[in-house]
Length: 459
Image (cartoon, rainbow, N blue to C red; front, top):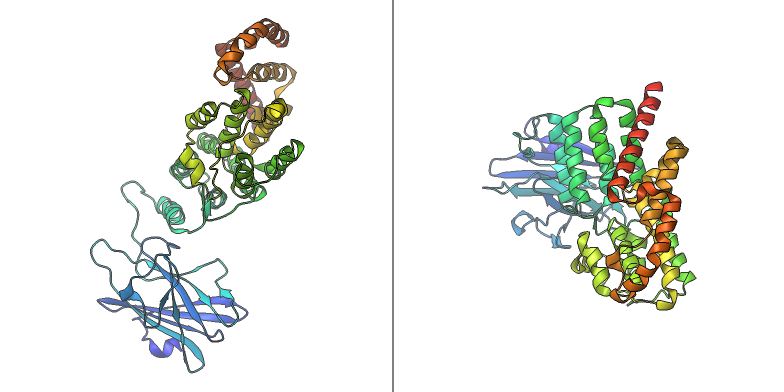
């Protein structure tokens, strides 16, 4: 039917296969001052087009202005309108005319779904929302992005970051995994992907937007990306510098994602903390269940400091603020944390022990640079001597910083210092100063690098 109404050469025709034999035919024509669009579909009536416009990027979903809406259109929300099809010769038919953008305005295409209100099913193509190109897309800055590959990557990244209504770290890591295909030895493209991940790691991009992510699914996306990066590191030696930088901005993920969800409940049950709204622990628990992010590492560190300080809220919020998590950020989460933590004095020591272990779980999932997580993963390659030195380092780091201890407790703490220093010396004198600890870390890193290089060379 589309062919009968469109002259060859004047229209760009296309077909989208919707599954079960159904087809959506389209035709687009540049008619001078306007763009004409014809849509024809063999789905059963009544049929409605649920649509928005893409000004610059795919999946942008902006509400069309009134001048672009055909008669009979109704506003659905701030991003979409609904326009009914008409029936012509047994086919669902819709004709649309869009004024051409002027000045700085843009019109790349339209994003849409097909909706059958009688049956309430949504119809997409196999990739998701349907996108119909209307005008040639603007290229990103060609002075910076000099190759077609870089432009493709940049358009995919910016389109997803700005265009997608629902977006999380999980989606970002999955997209990064896919974009690595074909650029394993392209240094400029890897640099672009690293910059993207770095902006994410320092909170310049959304970590969660209108989407709930199970910790297990989130950790799987991380593990998928880090495994791909590890394979590139092994197989493409010229790219190793960029791969290492990228790995530093992505948590390990792996099999501990489910523990993020389970262990917070275990802790609450062990200490008889009720799952009741209006309390810090329950608000944090809801966030962890639905959208765990690296912010949870900071919140856990702050809560441990809060416990060490016998419930000093200034200490709690200082630890958070020093790591970039403000009160406003806590309240901005889709699952907001608006209540101050309660100090449970009779449960203090048990909670400290449990949350120190929980912090290890959070670091294992979220932190790409946590030393203890990295060492745990590399134990088999360390050898006895380096393992003992690292055990000494971690034992030294178990003592809370002095600023976490209330002033009235510091005198008591001082009396215990002689005993603790003896205990430290029994573990190993080589961790007695920050300089020596840094030297130990450097020694371990060198040892691991040598072992890793030898292993890769052997392969």
